[in-house]
Each structure stands twice: as C-alpha cells, then as structure tokens.
Length: 86
Image (cartoon, rainbow, N blue to C red; front, top):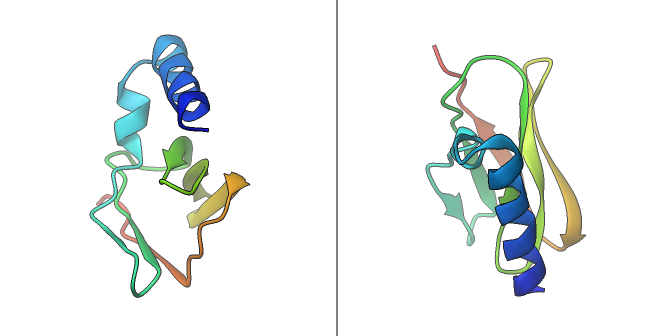
C-alpha cells in the first residue's frame, strides 16, 4: 500500500506541481483527540491529496466548509478544525 501512496503522490506532483501537496497544510493531527487541523494557505474552495500511515483520501474546503473524504483505509476523525485564511 505504501508504494501505491507514493505513486499517487508522485503522479499528483507531476500533473499539478508540488504546491498542491502544501495547499492543505495541517498544523497538526492530534491522534489521541482525533482532531484534524486544516489551515489552508489559499482562500476559497480547494481539494488536495491527504494521507496517513493507515489511510488516504482528499481534504479541502467546499462552500466554506472543511471536509475529508477517505478513499482507502481508516482514519477516525472526531473533529475537523478549519481556520480559513484571512
């Protein structure tokens, strides 16, 4: 699975540029509290690749609301804390 994640990430960088991987910059993911922090470096809606040791999917903002959509694996998130760029 790790090889597949690396292939997906490499493909994303080749098609869109390394900047997309940094767009969904997260301050921290608190595994104990199950909180994912989202602090994008851009304004407005976006979608970006996101992965952990146990899952991958997309994370982003749509119509002002943060989201995480798993594609494979399991990531238990109790809360998604979104801080929009001002």
